[in-house]
Length: 199
Image (cartoon, rainbow, N blue to C red):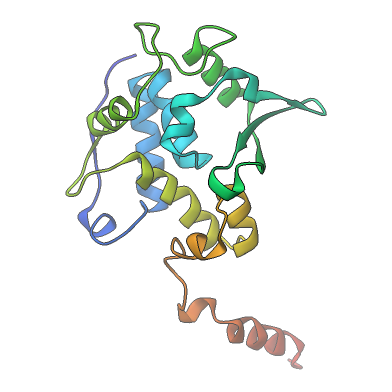
């Protein structure tokens, strides 16, 4: 695959923000897809499944298995949540992408050299894909996953579970729209009231 064009993200999405916008992230996934299957696998793991960069580096294919015939990815937490495991549903395309990027059934993501990635190499690959006013780090892609989940209506408890945070206050830090008037419960109550009013 060719290297494709480098993605340029609008500065308004990167200055003081923890996450990329939905549109910019979709463009970023496209840039990764055009670059290579390895780049796509890394971006999906960080930005769609919200893995920590250390988890991506240590990923083993035994974490990719099936649950009632459905491909899933199982990832353990860290710290106080180390004994808690999150299970993510993966599509056939994602599964095949990860298998191809591993190039061996008993290995995690491998470079062309056959060696596993280290975090500095993942960060460098992201920089080749994305030209930003401020640096795009692996953690910013993870932040995009958590922020988008919360903004799309996921309960804080569910966001904490998939992010594998031991403390919900950590998850709360990613809720960039917290306090927005459009999310105030009053809007829902007013909508219910209007729906119940006679025409």
